[in-house]
Length: 452
Image 1 (cartoon, helix red, strand yellow):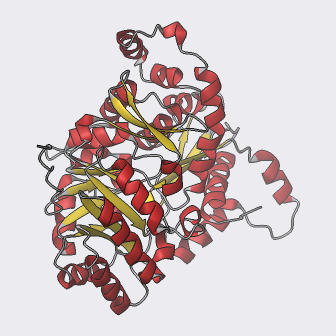
Image 2 (image 1 turned 45 degrees about the vertical axis):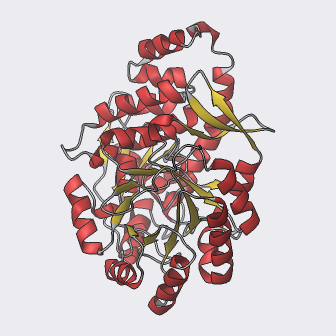
C-alpha cells in the first residue's frame, strides 16, 4: 500500500508570502514561516530552467536541490521544514513544459503556481506572465496540462484586465480548469504601485467563483499584522498575499508584533548560514531589511564582497565558522568564495537597479560636483532638485526631505520617494551638492533613460 496522499493547501484565511524575484529563496521563506506566514511562494523560475536541472539530495544542508546541469547553479532549493507550505511559482507559455515541471517537482513542494501577472519585460517578452492575460485559450491549456500531472495544490496569479467584465470572464474560465485558488493583483499590467489597488474588483471576482481568491497588491498599506487583517476584510477575498512590505520587514507576519531590523537581519543570516550561504541573495535581502544605507554601517554593508564579509558586518562570523565546522568544513577551506561572489556582485547591482517598480535601496557612486559645474555653464538649465520636484508633482508622488550623514569626510545625502531610498555613496564637500547627488540618483531610477 502506498503512502496516504498529503492534504492540499487550504487557501482560506491565510497570510501568504508573495513570489518575489531574488527575495523568495529558501532563507526568506523559512524566516517568513518562523514569523507566522501560513504559505510561502518561491521566486518565479522559468520552466526551461527547471527542466535543465538534476534533482539532488544535499546531505550537507539537508535540502533538495534542483541544480542546473550546465552551470552547476542551484536553481531551486527546498527543505523539509517548508514542505507543507512552499509553493513553487513558474513562468511558462507552453502547456507541455508546464506539465513536465509539474511532474518533476510534485514530491518536493506543497503547491505549484503559474505566473500570469508579472508585467516585467523578462516575463512578458517570453510570452509568460502578464502576456498570458489576453490569451485565455493558452491559459486554459497550460492549467489543464499542469492539473493532469499535479495532484497537489495548483494556483495561478493574475492581474486585472482593463475591462472588468473581461477579468470576470477570465477568472471564471480559470476556475473551470480545476485550479485550487487564484491570486489577484488589483492593478492592470501597465499600472504601478502608486496606482490604486482595486479592492472592489477583487471582491467582485471573489464572488464570481467558488474557489478561494487571494488578494494581492496592497503592500503599501500593510505596516503591521493588523493591517493584513484589514486588507483581508476590505478585499472580500479568502486570503491575502503580501510582497514589498514584508520584503522590507517579514516580521509583519508576527501576531505578537514587529521586530527591530537588527533582529530580523540576524534571524535571516542564521537561516542563510544553515541552508544557503548564497552571497548575492543574502546581501540583496539584507539591504532591504536594513533600509537607509547612508550610515557608516550601511556603507560597510554595501562594500561587502562575499558571504564572509556580510557576516562580519553583523558580527555573525563566529556563528558561520561554527556551522561550517559542524558540516566538516574548516573556515579556511572555503574554496573560491571571493571569486564566486565577485562574479555575482555586478549582476546583483544590475538587478537592484532594474527593479525600478519595487521597493528597495538604490545606491550609486555618483559625484555631483563636476555635473554641477557643467550645469552652471548651461543657460536656463534645471538642477536635479527642480527636475525631481516636477516629476513627483506630475506623478502624484510624495517626496520626503533629504537626510544627511557624515561631516568630517564629506556629506552623503539620501531621500525616500514612494517607499524607496535613493543615495549616492560619494561624500561631498557641501550638503547642497550631496542633496543634488541623491536626487540625481533618484531621477536615474525613476525615469527610464534619464540623462542630465
